[in-house]
Image 1 (cartoon, chains in turn red, green):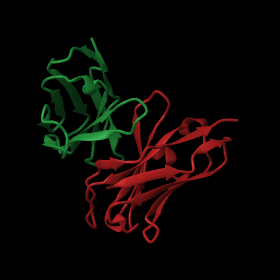
Image 2: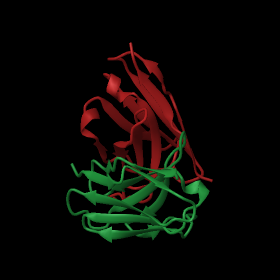
Image 3: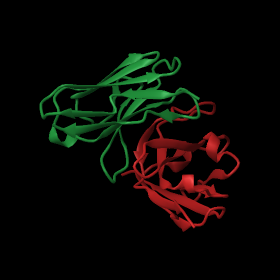
Image 4: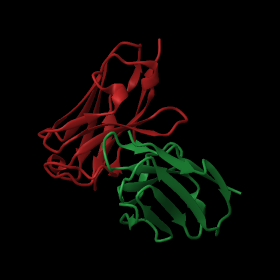
Length: 124
Length: 107
């Protein structure tokens, strides 16, 4: 069965860095686009970033552009989110999610499987 | 960016009721509209994709409709397990955006 397991969250001071991981299993990871979606405490869902199945394309939400980097290692079936220059407003549960379908030029941009989430808290 | 506006923000209903949640996009998104259910402390769960297609394993009491800018999620007969928060999400363009959510509570 499809499983996505995030790790790497924690408490970090403003301005510092953190790297999240998402270990995938139960499907052919290298053929699916992947996303990060976050949810601040008591708030709604916010899309963060997408990476194509082969890593050829990446897109970001404006507030994280230039600070966050999405990447993947298809040999390890793992998705990453490198988060630099963290701010208090980045505090959230971060979910990885699978896109249902990507071609070489477009992805469906909806999410059929989600991980359980990892908490990131940015505080001094 | 495309703004997604859901209404109502919260809703009280009883088991067996028919419930409708609406979602409006700030521009034409054709049918690139998806609905999710989220229960407290859990990841969201895909219910409807492409405005009206039922995700595998989702009960048939859930249905979606609409196109262009106006969309609806309908639950035909509420069950106890349906009390949760519902989100719409546009997949027309990046950045993808979600509605603010509709919290469905027991009356």
